[in-house]
Image (tube, rainbow, N blue to C red):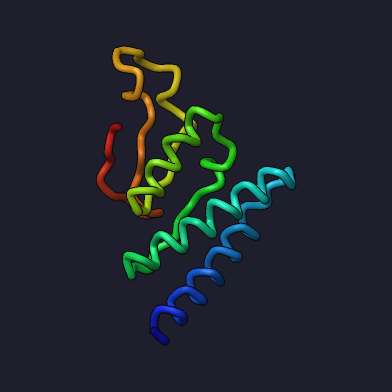
Length: 112
């Protein structure tokens, strides 16, 4: 139980640092993103896995993309949406234009 509390404190500190580094000017977006961060922390602690990379691009997403973010958080994965490109390219399938990258390093790409 002590390790669970310690891991939660570590992840909360990482979350606060990430929120501070986002430098989002809109207070409402910051509050909304912080609620997602806290929910994300609790979700990840239940799986006893320490990982937190939630990028400010996700906080600037539209409502349709927020549903995808919440879906990823529900499944407990450490992904963020890269919405900067591929949105206005091919429209063959409705969800093939958003790429999700794992973590902050170069990793496998998953097309939803």
